[in-house]
Image 1 (cartoon, rainbow, N blue to C red):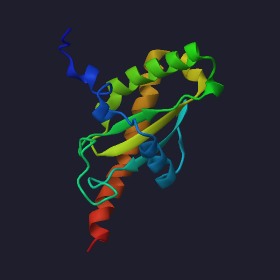
Image 2: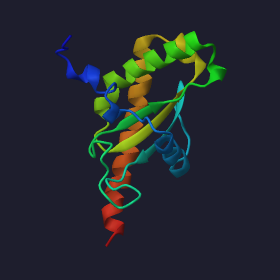
Image 3: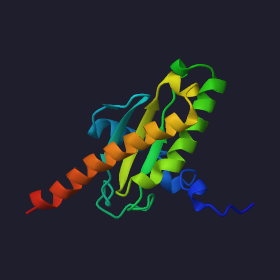
Image 4: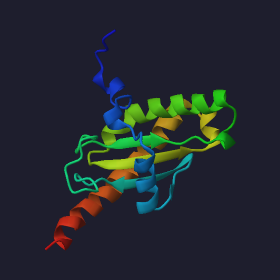
Length: 147
């Protein structure tokens, strides 16, 4: 089945999701925990070069990648899966707000399961706008400090 809306596949594509444990750990170690109303989040401006100094092949160098963590404390598997489905859809609809290569890890709160979906989309959008503002400032400062 072919979808006319390519944004449906943006988050489900491996290029737009954090998948490896090492990627999650790199984001956790290199950033501080930030807080939104319904979730906490971590983010890191991604370098186009890997740890070995060669170009990264596993990610689109211009695209944001998003990972979700929903621990067992959030409830039984049915509840955790529902939270992840709702979060993936909200991220999919708001991902275009981030225009820089950044890795993001979202930790939703349990209240996300009962939250109105439009409110969840607004929350994810607010988080992504905050990340975009902060990362844009960091990106603007980085070239100047290299001189």
